[in-house]
Image 1 (cartoon, rainbow, N blue to C red):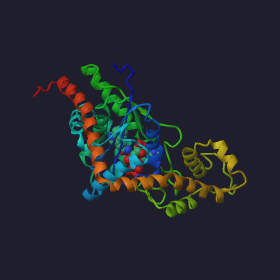
Image 2: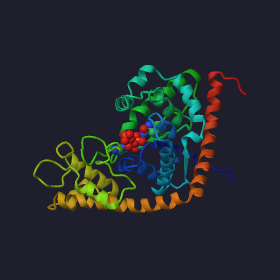
Image 3: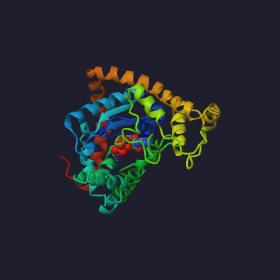
Length: 336
Ligand code: ATP
Ligand code: LTN
């Protein structure tokens, strides 16, 4: 019988295996991917090619790439329902990446916030790849004709440049690429550092950052020490500009438990930060416990992991090849 169900829209995203995954990556990106599994046709990858724009130790990069894959699965991404792959296994990313560099302007790349930040942080290694990174990211997305790109707030600028590149290319050659949209949720899109609620939680600030594989005692200690506010009110109330630390903790608690800010205020009425901070810590520990156990179990099964990334690369290549063939033809390359 012919399958008459309408094709699902395509969702695609990636994370660089440049450090261990943290609560910001989970609440801002991965949790959102898991919740949307049934609704879309999903492609998620380890962006290892992006990672070498900053110098890496090869053995660490290899270990973190596989660990990240195990964590994707442990967080709930079922490999039967999501195509999970390693970017460098699908060579079309590099090939389309080159072509799209020829359709990306110097001025556009110079305006990218991530390039400005990273070239300040790594001033000894401002390489060409760090600069043209957004053209490769556009290739990652456009190869799969993705409809939606679920990311945290900080990646919005790169997604917008991807749209501009797709539109520019389509205007010259006809309708080659689907023009994608960023998919940014309201709660969790920007988790802030526990030590400094005015900067985002990031792996480069390990004190303010909770890693997914961190020990429960360490997680509890970080939450108990979390910066709340300097007033003496000692009251759990959602007021982001007056009490950014409390608002951040409420955002984390809300994202994990599904409770609204009002419900959280009621739950902790009259109890103060002394009760609130460990309660958020415990909710995080309980959410991460099964993820940590699953990650250890999956990592021990190398054959299973290998099977997942090989099948993933095969499925991803199928779509990527189709788009690249079309692009080669359009720009005038002779067919081999
Ligand atoms: P860095 O520490 O170098 O800034 P990172 O921890 O932000 O890196 P990325 O690989 O850049 O990690 O991000 C992976 C995904 O997680 C992206 O979709 C990004 O938007 C999201 N993300 C990262 N940090 C946060 C955060 N604090 N809150 C919400 N989402 C986040
Ligand atoms: N630039 C992203 C990682 C990334 C990505 C992508 C995200 C690379 N390619 C394609 C979504 C879609 C980052 O630094 N977090």
